Length: 169
Ligand SMILES: [Fe+2]
Ligand SMILES: [Fe+2]
Image 1: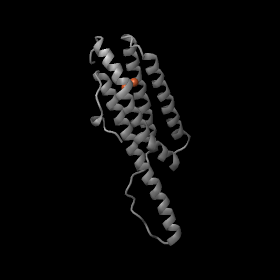
Image 2: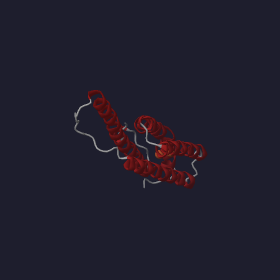
Image 3: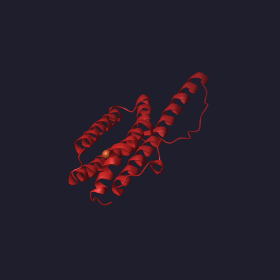
Image 4: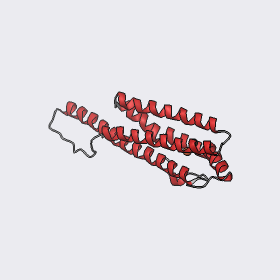
């Protein structure tokens, strides 16, 4: 997981706010997925133990329910927050006629399609494989993409807009 506090800031405050939200969403999603995975593995181990021991042996449940609905809601929140994040940047780039806005917009579109595909995996069924896959997306792949995007396209964009009269909203 990547903490927003440890990431470089860009020259426009509204962008920093959106980035903080994105890291927070991804970290919260990772925590929920960890809980779901623990529960699923716990259930599997319990079933195995009961089958082997054929006894009344009971294990105290220490983790809560997987929270499939909460995960679905958080995936939706991440998607909606990302749509807003990208729309705000795109409106700003258009307003200030940022020269590389077409490339920046194209990258946003690619990442939104990728995010929608990840979301659809969960909708199709929350198997252990899907939980592990989405956990890797939330904790590693998406934050790494975001960090790289911040230090490249977003930094250049915010700097250009700031130098051309854009204010920190
Ligand atoms: Fe951004
Ligand atoms: Fe961006």
